Each structure stands twice: as structure tokens, then as C-alpha cells.
Image 1 (cartoon, helix red, strand yellow):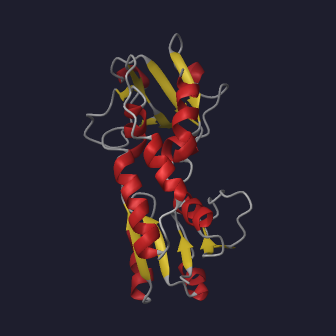
Image 2 (cartoon, rainbow, N blue to C red):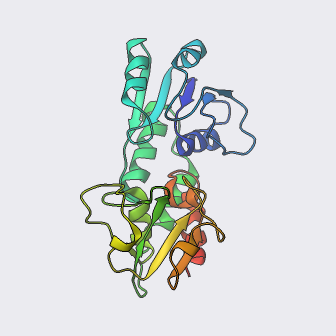
Length: 233
């Protein structure tokens, strides 16, 4: 059996749901499954490399965007295998999860992954809307080009008004935003809510959504389409 340390909350959930007991370490931000009981090794941006080394994992799973290359290089220099994911679309994420679970973790393909593929195979036939998607404030930052969350929204009939921006997460003043129909406010990484976010966009339609279901790729994808569709309505 592989001994796995995860540096990404969505990958932690994917592995723990598929093979309870396989994970031996995870970040402080790994909140799912709710009963996860493993060693904690710091944050996604500041993991304690020495603590991970003490756990003697067979493999460490990470994400190109969420984790720092300097930390991954330090693990490699200590002789540990590191598996790095980098999906920018739902289809790429589903394929990436299959490779990680089967090749890196040496597990059978889980049924939840087949369910997620089925859920996201249906095309969207309704009216389309354009949106801006803040991910932070003070300063304001938004989803830009080539993001997993942007593709999730596109598959739900919501087109990112900043999808052609040169940056993936541009900083833009609110009065410089392009035309859009709705502002989508996820509750992570910044905890936007009905009382923190919509007031900055007076007169605009605002929808608060689950950040986990918008940005995580894993078992949450099974329910994400239905939940986000409801929240975006």
C-alpha cells in the first residue's frame, strides 16, 4: 500500500474518499472528508518539508498552481516522489484524477469518478450569461484566462467576461471591469457572503456560490453541477 501526503485539499478528498487509510499527511486547509484524521504539515504555500520527510511518504501529491516549486524541489532533493497536477478544464481534471489515483496511488478507478464524468458530459442548452468572478478583495482580484473554475462556469452557461485577459488572476479596479450580467461570489479563497461582496456591485445581480464546488476537482464534482446551477439561478 502506498503512503501518501497531499498538499492540495481537493486531492486529499479524492484520495481519502477512494481509499481511507492511504493518506498519512495533509495540509491544514484540507477540510474534507470531515472526519479526516492524519498528520498536518502546514499550509499549501508553506508546508513543513521536514515534517513531511519524517512521515516517509511513498509519494506526495501537489498542484502546479497551489503549491510552490521550491517546496516540491526540496522534497525531490530528499528523494521523495512528487506527483503534480495542473488541470485547467473539467475534462482535464477528470483525466488528471484518473491518472493520479491509478498510476500514482495504485488504486482502482473509483465509482465516484465515473459518476462525475456522467454528470459533466451533458451539454448546456439554456440562455447564456456573462459574469465577473472575484476571488479576493483589498485588492480586488478576479478569475481571468484558462482557469478550472472558469470552465466549470462555462459548462453551466456562464461565460467569464475576463476569459481573454492576459493574466489568470488579474487585479482590476471595479470601475474598469468590462460589461457583464452577473457577479459570481465564491466563499473561497476569500469568504464572500451575502453581507460581504454584493454591496460593492450596487444594482448588479449577485450570486453567492460554494467555492469548494466551483474550484475543487474531486468527489465534489458529482454534486457540483446541480448545486452550482441552483446557486446561480
